[in-house]
Image (cartoon, rainbow, N blue to C red):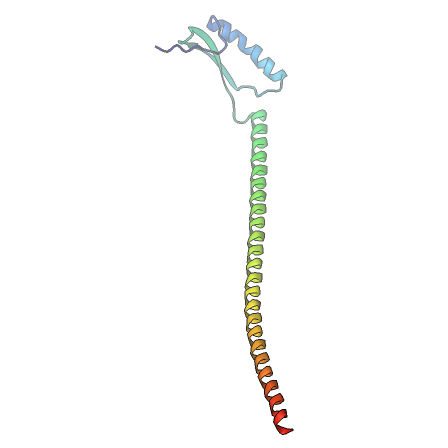
Length: 145
């Protein structure tokens, strides 16, 4: 059998609990806390004592103030999140563009290397032909003498 201990404020009688309600209300009003619209008492079977319960109206100023504050915080968090997502997306797009640019440069480099290789081959071919022609001209000059 599990034993649960009641942690609420205990009153020995219903009358004493009801008599305590105005003091609670006064303290809450002095501290500018959310004041309940209704308060009552009930008997707790667990601790065999009386407790005070309260009902808070959704129209109270403190409640509305808290709701507005939380709504503002939610809006700010949404904006922060959107800003963060936008920054991440912008950074990602920059990275993609940079990667695309690098790929373009690498492709241009590949094309230029291929052209360079072709030019080297053409140069070698022309040089070989030139040397052959030069040799022929030199040889032809020896025969005309």
